[in-house]
Length: 188
Image (cartoon, rainbow, N blue to C red; front, side):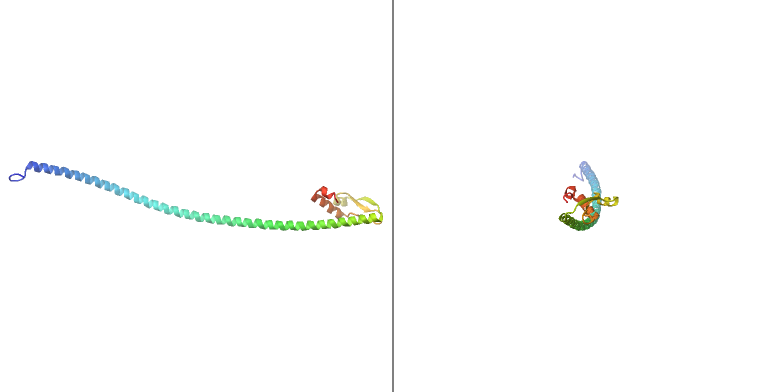
């Protein structure tokens, strides 16, 4: 202050100082506003990315649920198909077991008939030996020989022309030899 007013140089200097400070504040304010705009843009981008990620996670969750349901259906279908295959295999095994059982029963009957036939033959041999009969080999005709495969049958030469081994007996013996091997068949 001076007599009758302000000191013009000091006021100018003061105003110049204020102007510089004001310009600095305005520049700083503009810089801060620009940084705020950039920060807002980044925040907006982050919100958009969060929305996108959220939708992606939801889509991924939905897709994974769909795949899980689809996988479960396929697993159930595969399990059902496997169970059906197992049932079929068990059924076939049962049928085969029944068939084998029937074959065993049939073979037992054939063996029983064979044993009975052999007993009859042995009884005839004993009868012939007891009566002192003579054995004679007789050759069958071609039709009978193919059925008998051996081509020869023992006949009683003494009292009767009844063959000791009939064609049925021979075919049973030959079948038995083929099934069990020739070494066991030769025992008879």
